[in-house]
Amino acid sequence: MQYSEAIQTIEKKLTQHSPQRLKIPEFAPAAVVIPFLDINSKAHILFTKRTETVEHHKGQVSFPGGAWEEQDASLQETALRETFEEVGIPQQMLNVIGQLDDFPTISNFLVTPFVAKMPYPYPTKISTDEVAEILEVPLELFLTDKHFRLEERDIGSKKYPIYYYHFGPSVIWGVTGYIINRFIELVFEYNPAPTSIYHDPGAVDFMKDRIRRGE
Image (cartoon, rainbow, N blue to C red):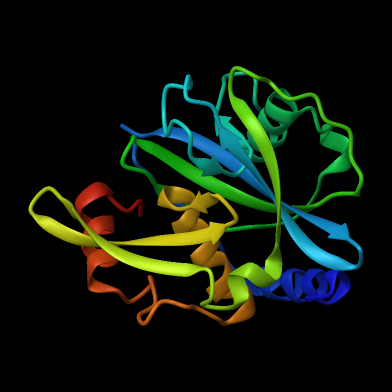
């Protein structure tokens, strides 16, 4: 998809979207950035591949971001600070254009995703303790079922859907797979899964099992 078309669609949809905020006191607040790049006029999304030495989600593909810290004035600031610390992209290069729904993880983080656009090329200084490599994934990969796989996994006594997106030798799944799936459905009205995560009974049960909604 053309970069300009993608950004216009994202800005329009997210302007109309009221992000769902959750209150889960026992979960640690965290935030990530979904950064969009213009590479040869095509929309790409920047991901990071985590090292095998990080505490959580070892070796997984993720969005840049991390846990909230006391010096952060907001979760958006958390997302931008962590992106700079992980991959060296200056905060002023990330133009945030919207916020998505909070998402609780099985590692007891409550993740708030922010969508941003950024220039290409961009400077990097990778934190080798946290990040193994940077991936620039075409948006079009998420707008087809060619690279998508759905599995069910036993978590406790129940089965839940797990989304996998294949990009060469890398696989985008777990929390990141859920977040990108929800984002693509919300903004581009496409979902390669047979049932929407918003209506999938497994996903609903998972949310009910793991969170308490704030009033």
